[in-house]
Image (cartoon, rainbow, N blue to C red; front, side, top):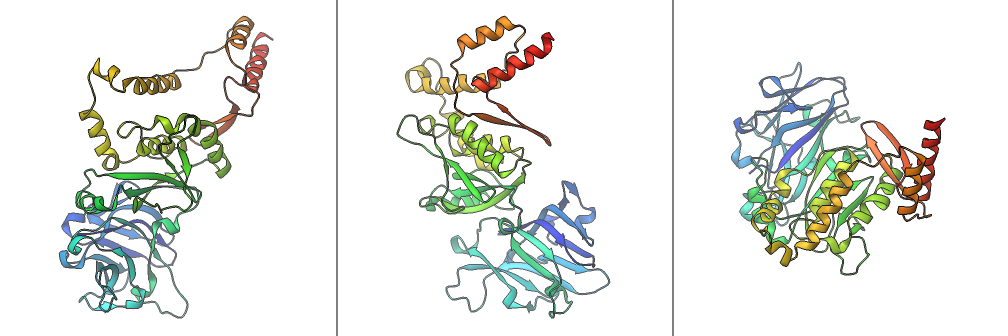
Length: 384
């Protein structure tokens, strides 16, 4: 079973390369969402794009592997995955280079992608960057120009990663069977968002008034959950300090630890909200499918939902509806005065960040002293 896919191709040479997923199952190669003609990607000099459909299959289930050719040359490089002869324990999966007749090339450049799963037949997905660059004194053969790196090690700091963990170690095998580069269905996962080299997740807390949003001591590591893969979600236009303000002023108050619910308000729902605030894609359906299905199956009809834990769920729903409602606009000085009497003014510094497209601005949060002062100034301008 294939376990690796190329999500980005970068050509730092003056040569042109042709890349093709040789097997029929992986013929739909895309660049920036557009399909490539005849399933062949043309990497011209300076090429630097996200890709889909370029998979590196396991050597025992492929006839061609991932084919790489160079313009003006008959040389063919085949990339496959499999065990390496002489490996100490024999359980690692290696990204290998082979010639057109499948002769092993440059074993010292082969990369270990982690431990194989059950009987070596199922593997987790690994995202890779394919980079063409010239290395001094190594020659110009195709294998010397081709380099693979883990996607998480190559992305800029403002690229947002969704780190996916198997919920427990026992879930690794069924998750791998149900989710790979052939198909994605659903599984039992824990997720966290990594941006600017910091990883944030949502957990249950027993104490009232404590936020459930926590920064991980070390990204991609957890004492219980088993790291599976990182999914590139896009690039945020927020700066690093703006992301921290977003978390402190909006996400932490919203996602309290006592509001955690296993099926309806968990780490995956938090990540979906966080990704939306960062202006990138939401959590893929294969990650949240199991929780959504469970929430639908175990939803209690009224009035049983009121008797069995429905009050907390209803309160959360009301809170979300209030956030979606458009803010009231002050039409007169009398309305501003009434707002001042109704609102509990806080003098603590509080800001929220609004990001729409490429436009960003920071404004005082509604309900604070700064916010009321700003509304008063706007109203005075209208009356003038």
